[in-house]
Image (cartoon, rainbow over all chains, first blue to last red; front, side, top):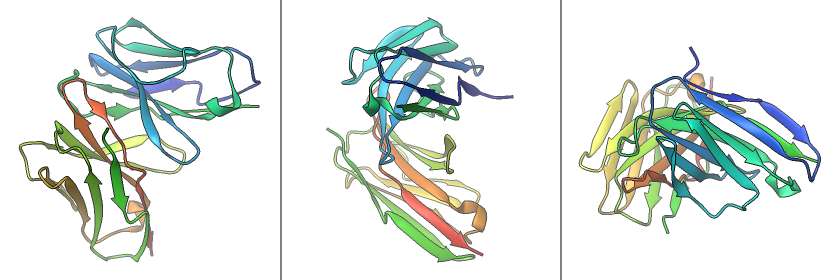
Length: 113
Length: 112
């Protein structure tokens, strides 16, 4: 059984488009995260939600908007895509915000042309 | 701002060798520290989690140590195998909001 799943696995799109990446976890965790791994392999946190409430919002352009319909899902919507948005986006979850161990999804490779 | 450095950036060893991967971080006020491995094109797999009150954790051939006061952690891999080839990432965590900072990783290649 997949613990943290993401769709799609690959996403190729043109500049200016709007796209969404979906994440679901079946671990019963309260806290979910979005990370971005750029071409230099730096992995940086973007957002964190705890029980559908935003708790971490790093310096991310307003074009990125996370949405958590319930605590098992955290989707990432990106408006007006730019070339610099090309990266691998990882979703993760943890039991709660005080219990650290994080479980990662397989990643979504976004390519903006 | 937390900065994480991992040394070496890349390492190539023959199968069977014992090896040590190093991680240093600038802000010692961490909650805990986690070591991950990342296989090419894949997500991150958690290896070991060390709480700030602990000095080490062991899992199979892996042993991770933590010296919070000096801002250092090491990952020791015993009797390395080709299947250990991956990038190893160190991730200290600050505070109850689990703000994680990742190092760039050490890319390990174990040669059969």
